[in-house]
Image 1 (cartoon, rainbow, N blue to C red):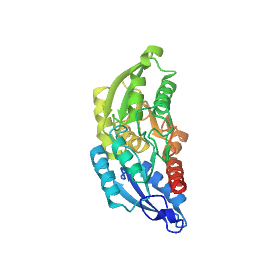
Image 2: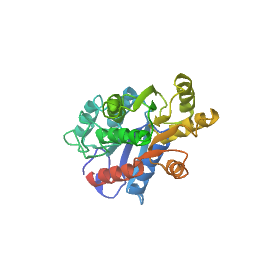
Image 3: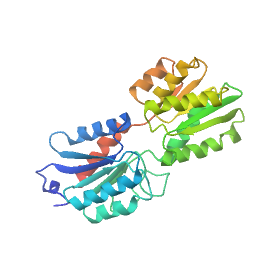
Image 4: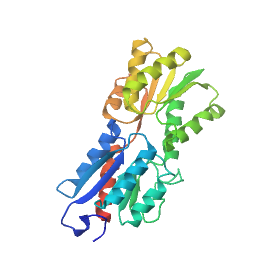
Length: 278
């Protein structure tokens, strides 16, 4: 009868606690994948909205452990290192722990679990995600000299954002035609804040001809700002997420590219790992 709750009986649904920022479509897709794997009464999900507050997420995990009613945790970790003690506490309480999307632990080049006793992890390694960002910028700049790049990050302390920033800082070494003329953060992976950030970037760096945004939702906001400024036709928009609206925007020629992520798959596989473990 594994697990902190009653799911280990094989008859009752596995009780799963999910911890992550709920107010964006990426996480909505993750939850949709979780629901697919949980269908038919295999699992029930209780959602804890951490926003982008790592301290809040840590406290939520500790509180959920104390409640003693959960068999499994699925976590989008907001701080790869700081959350480790809370996760170790959950594992010691016989709770299956799976992280998706962001890493849990110090290594950025692996998708393997990094904490002893962890049920599993479903991530695209941050180092790979960072490499894809640089590749997309280089592709957008291939026939531009100079290529003046603006970069809009969401939460700059996230693992893949740090990896992408490191690649961005070194991009001119191998591609002398590329100049990074503006770097801003804070869109939070949603559209509305990205509008104002893009407007500020356009004012500060009018020579910009490529704009990289690390979220399809935020790119929709950036697109609005570019359109309002009459710059949508001469600034190539590179996004990240691979969502259906983004793919359509690329197909229609409004955006240059979007980098594929698979949040629904992450949620489905993460839930299946948790159910199988319990």
